[in-house]
Length: 130
Image (cartoon, rainbow, N blue to C red):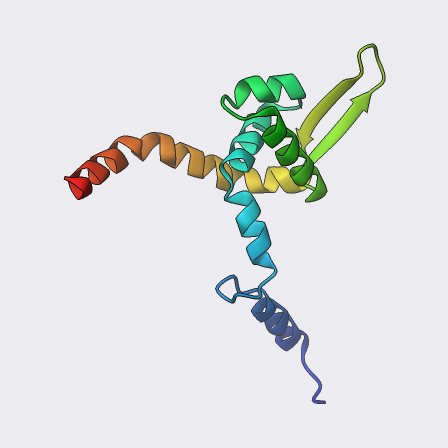
């Protein structure tokens, strides 16, 4: 087995994570962050911690089941932290972690792009369908 330099080892590691390859582990993360509810929840938490009901009001149209599933998956992936404060009733807050904040520019840019270009997309669809 040949000895590798540090640069060669880094390149080998980088090659392991090529999202164009079917077996790449990064694909599961791309699948997660491309989900509309994930993107909207992350954007909703950009301004700071929110309670479950506040997230639900901010992200209109998400069912309770889907919001719960989304928050749990984001917590599991280390993107969102869940803080329980003992009170009557119990207070539960959700906030972005450092990892979640590092993803925010990407999902915020996608949200902004969609809001800016939706009319052009609608026009293109009408032209295509017509």
